[in-house]
Length: 124
Image (cartoon, one colour):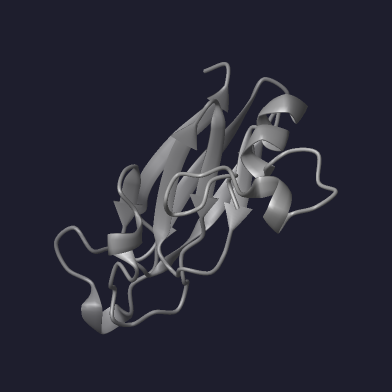
């Protein structure tokens, strides 16, 4: 609940009585840099107001599909299968999306363990 209903009306206080702010506004106010979500079973990275919303992929999907793609209007979208590798250092965080392919499904551009997407949070 970001605060508005499907018609664009402010419905936050009615839907979440007692909450001080919608979740996104609370993230921004608190200085959150990244939020991980696991439900849609694809790799999706979106950013708004300095907050990265990272959907985590399904590491064991032998169909290699981008499920729920239509729910995402922007951002970096990649098909399954794979996992995230998060490397934390004092100056920055490095996020790698590492693909997983079954031996019989490997081929040009489809190597098990290849890094499909990388980004940094913080100073490069």
